[in-house]
Every structure is written in C-alpha cells, then in structure tokens.
Length: 117
Image (tube, rainbow, N blue to C red; front, side):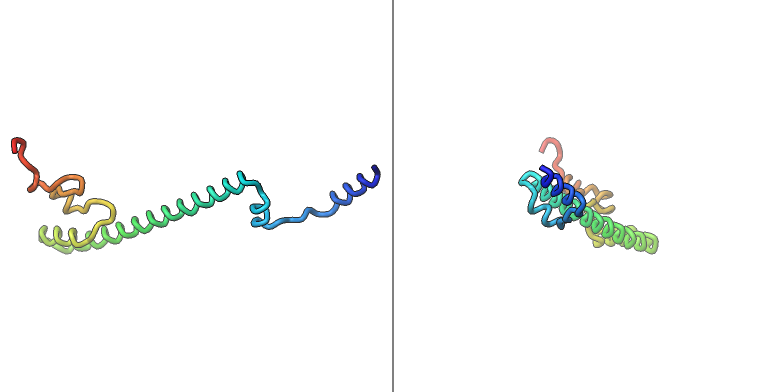
C-alpha cells in the first residue's frame, strides 16, 4: 500500500505531459471531434461571408464614388443616366433603374399591360 502512495506522490510531483492540440483532438471522443469540426466549418463559412460582404461594400463604395464624380461634373441628365447604367450592379438596383421603375422584381413601365388586356 505504501508503494502505491509513493508512486502517486511521484506522479503528482512530475509535471503533466502537455499534448499538442492535434493530439488532444485525435485522442478525444467522437462527440468532441464532431463538435470541433462543426465549429471549425462554421468559422470558415462565416469568415467567407465576412470577406464576401467586405468585397461587396468596397465595390459599392467605388461605384458610388465614380457616380458622384460623373454626377457633379456633368450637367446633362441623359449623360448621368448613361453613366449610371455603365457603372454596373453592386447588389442593389442602380439609381437610373430605380428612377425609371425597371427593378428586377418589377417589369418596366413600358411592358406593363393595361387592366383589361
């Protein structure tokens, strides 16, 4: 019995062996591994969404800056309309499409059918 306590005391005095993170994951159970892989995959997906949205915002900001330059330098509304059509689409309807009523979810005003026909 004394030998058992002596062995326990020696084990407590020696520092515990630190495993690497990879060793801890590979030596863990199926539930722990599943949760860790699920968290890791959601983290990668969320960072992908963050980077995609950052890219969209940067693109919209650049398009807005280009439109502002054209808007303030041009006195002709038809030139402004043409420039806004050429500016591209950044996930939102352009100013010219909103003004003319040709948003993607609505048909253009010219193609709308009267009530009785």
